[in-house]
Every structure is written in C-alpha cells, then in structure tokens.
Image 1 (cartoon, rainbow, N blue to C red):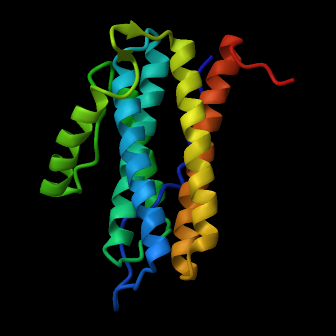
Image 2: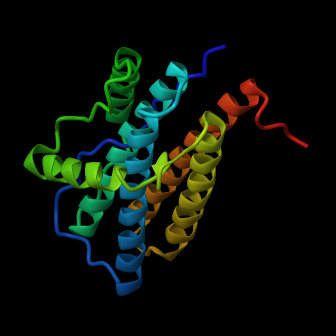
Length: 205
C-alpha cells in the first residue's frame, strides 16, 4: 500500500512589502528555537532517508525534508522582519515537491533551488548535522521502525513548539504563518503514523 500524498498546502515564500515587522525578545527566542528544530529535522530526515531499507519510506522522508527546508526558509524570513504570505502559490510548489519525491530514488534529498548562495551554505551545515543526527550514532544502526518512532516523536515536539509560539506572537499575519507551519508538522506526523500503521507498528488503543 502506498502512503497518501502530503497535502499541497505548503507555504508560499513570497513576502509582503512595506516596513519590516518589529519582533519582541520573546518572539525572537521562539524563532531561534524553531530555526534550530527545523535544522535538526532536515538533518534527521536527510540522513534517515539514506539508511532505511524501504524505498517507499525513503521517498516519504525525502519529501518531508523538502517541506522542512521550506519551513526553515520561512522562519529565517520572519527573523529578518519579513511577513511571508500563505497563498495559493504553495499549491504549485507542493505539486513540484511531490513530483521530485517520486523521481528521487535513493540519491538524497532534492532541495528547492530558490535559496541561492545562502541555501547552499545551509546545505553544507545540514550535511554536517546529518552526520550527527539519527541513524548511525556510535556505530549503532536503527531499524526502520525505530527511525519512524524517533521522527514521530520529533514531529510531536516541533508541532508543540509552533502551537505555543503562535499564541506568543502579536502580529496576526505571523500568527497565521506559524499556525500553518504547525498544521504541516501535524501532517508530517500523520504520514509517519499512517506508514507505521500499515506495517503494524502503531496500533491505536
């Protein structure tokens, strides 16, 4: 059985014009935490996608890694005082990501090319993180089930972070953006749960 595709309601990375948003100290603290969590997620998904034995699972992890990359770019934009749009442009991007994920065999994560030089630098940092995050730590190799359990736990924690952060932001547009990311993190968790349920690894009580 194939996993159902992720919903194509990803964030558009276009930004509103006008003056930059002034962020409070608490808001910046949450953004820094979110940035660190997104970097860790990208590293985990990228690394794990190279280690799982199931190609279906590898494709799913690569696809989610691309979504997490978009989340990271969005958080960085907010940290710079920009207000990303949540618009219909994300549907086209989501379709492109699904197509890329279907075409990418085991050859690593395919990233969007819109980030330019800064994204290349991020990619280098994420590769370093990927060597430390998950999969093969201290010579210990995890099973596909253990990898899914780790990622599901990670998604629950990240979704909780965004849920709290949403209520701490004063700008209504930024609250909408963070709530949208939180919804996508829930979708990631559902995709992992659905795969595990198909394998008999996760049974609802």
